[in-house]
Length: 408
Image (tube, rainbow, N blue to C red; front, side, top):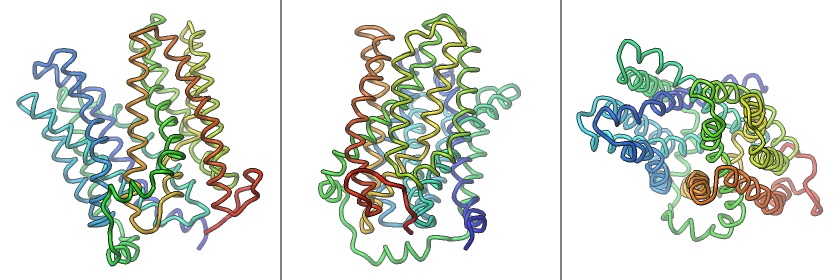
């Protein structure tokens, strides 16, 4: 089987649903607070309602692992897609704030199940020597959807109001579901084999792999925290130096597009050189960007910092999923991946909350520098445990990661 044939065979089933689902989320995020305001929420309540999607993702990761273990990846994708369509329609046309809040929480739960099942699907269909490239492209499809969604939603707001963005989201989520259902079943043999095996409870799997989750998992937590904090600190810094919303949006769009150019090279580097080199590049570049952010006092300087952050983040697209796929056991894989995603979601939450706390207690520049220091401290931790995982995976020398060799 050639590279070209292999990628063509999985392109639509693997990446199409993810791009469309991410586009649905991207269409809703910019207008969720405005929709809550329409329903009578004050600023604090609106912020809480918007955060419920993330809360749903966090609360849903372990149940999602259990669900995938019971019914398989494909069935989970179908059910999660259907729930997301309904949740988006309810959120857009809910007559009350509490109903909108429940719908966003349900959408977050569905998103957790969808992403976990998608990761398992990719592990099954990708040969081992191209695993990281596939996961990086999966991360790139998410990023592309998150860029396209707001643009399409904005076009629909003019004629339809805020419901236009939700209509776009519902259409994209429906298209994602249809793509899953219409695509060939590439993982049925794997799923039938796993269905015949005994399944462990999620908490039992977590206990069994506690050491791994507290070593490599801490590295995942740090990476996720920096990524989440980046999305918060850049618009806050734009306000800090007196830029308006248009300037901030322009910086975000340019940086978002720049990320996409590093997605495949980053995956190639992980496959050929080892995961640790990409983790190192990501943490050095993003942490260094946080450290120099306090000197960015103009739009041009902030754009430069945002672009450097985008290079590091794009280079590591798919790194968390790749590390999880590397570490996942053959038996009880879904439950383990749920616990792995929990570490990432915990990192997302801690990054945003940590930034907010230090900003409130000290200042925004102090928060940026603190995040940079945390990232560099995490680099030392990550190199120890991910280098070890690289060597174990390829049977390389004990004194350091060597050239990443194909190992199907």
